[in-house]
Image (cartoon, rainbow, N blue to C red; front, top):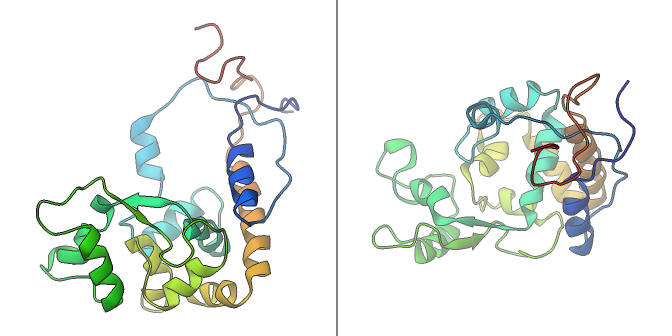
Length: 216
C-alpha cells in the first residue's frame, strides 16, 4: 500500500502546465508518488536515453521500465518545443559515426542552417538551437512532420523514422497526420512514465522541502 498523499515535490505538474500553455494536452496526474532518499548518478546515466542512442538502444531502455514503442515516440514528441546545445548535433554535422562526413539523413537545407549556428571551428558548444525549427514555442505535431522532412535535431529523434525497418515509423506517420492521436498518446505516456517503479512500503518519503531529504 503506498502513501496516497500528493508529494509536494512532484515534477509532473510543471511539464503539464508548460505543455498546456503551449497548446498541448492536459492529463490527470496520479497522486501519491514518494520522493527518494538517495540518488545514483551513474545508474541514472546508464538508464536514461541519450541524444546519440540508436533506435535499438532507445527501445531497450524504454522497455526496461515498461514503456513500449508508442510511449517512446509520443514522449520524444516533447521535442516539439525546447532548445538544445550545439554540442549535441556537431557530430551529425561534421563527423557522423566517425566518418568525417555529415549524417546522410539530415536534410541539406536544415544541415546548412544548423552549420551556421554551430560552425565546425570556433563555435559556441553551448549555443542553443530550436528542437523544432518550424514552430519552436508551440506544442503541436510538427515534430513528426519535421522527422518526415529529415529535420530531426538529435540523432535519437531521426532514428524513430530513419532506422532501417523502424517499427516506430508507422507511429511517427500516424502522429504527423493526426495531432489529437499524438496528444492522447502523449498524455497516456506521461502517466505511464510517472508510474515507473514507485516507492512502496517503507521506501521513500514525502519531502517537506523539495531541496533536501527530510531531517537533513
